[in-house]
Amino acid sequence: MESGLLSWIPRLAGHTVVVLGDVFLDEYLIGRATRLSREAPVPVLELVRRIHLPGGAANPARNITALGSQARQVGLVGADPAGTQLRALLRAAAIDDTALVVDPAHTTSIKTRILAEGSLRFPQQLVRLDQVDHSPVDEAPLARALAQAVVGAQALLVSNYRAGVVSDRLVATCRELARAHGLFLAVDTQGDLGRFGGFHLVRANLPDTEATLGQSLKTEDEIQRAGVNLLRELVAQAVLIGRGGDGMSLCVPGAYYHLPAANRTEVYDVTGAGDTVAAVVTLAVIAGASFLEAAHLANYAAGLVVRRLGNAVPTPDELRWAIEHW
Image (cartoon, rainbow, N blue to C red; front, side, top):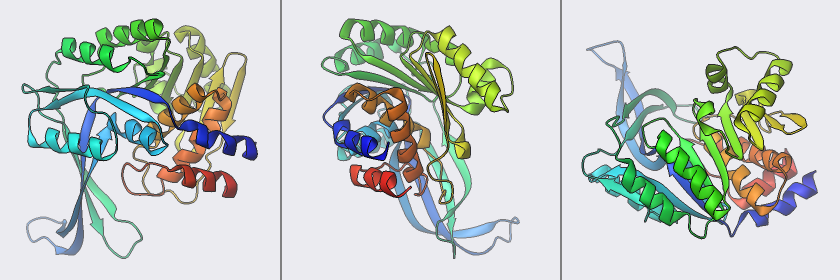
């Protein structure tokens, strides 16, 4: 298996994937605790550094470009400084932002994480503050941008952060465009799995899968039955259920696999690990890998990014190292 997986790494490059979804500007405020506040029983942090990264649906796009393929971003930002900064970050990551819709009626969503730095190896997150614009989205310009972006692409990956961009109309447009252009159609969704019938790959975390089904999934048998049922109901080629420290479960027609987590001992920040999985599986499948091979590659990639702060992406060399050493 190891040599087979290694052979797929260079083949992850050279593809074009369109990524549709809610994009955010992720902000990290890292400070050093100097004393307790006199105003409340909380630490006072002196700001040490500020980091900005593309977040939400922009994170799978970063993973795609980091592995040598082209990502075309489709989403919505405001005509504001945060939107300008996010577009600059996308371009710096070699992500094509020409299909990103700028809407003056919207504000760019920002997720701010405040972290305390101390004697530990990594800063510790204290709180997260989300500024998300939930006002209605004008679907027409997004649909036009999506139709232009998919020309010449091999796959369309929908990253559903449930902030309004991935509407029912755009989901239907995704199906139509996938049929018309012969695209591999994948979704990474935070719930509402039933909306994505007809997609080739459906990925979700276990809690979101449980919420969709309205039942708790505790045993391996229960998770397997849920995967089989979802595969049938969604008419999908594969259902991938993320299980955190317990790895992931893959269900394909006629087979079920549980992949234990590749890395369980060096986990610092799980932010964006699901984005990495969706991006790597999509790239591997359009490169010709089986869903099982793609899931193994994604499992190693996820094990790499949880070792770093924030939305991290694996490089081909890092992925090769993980396969050889874990």
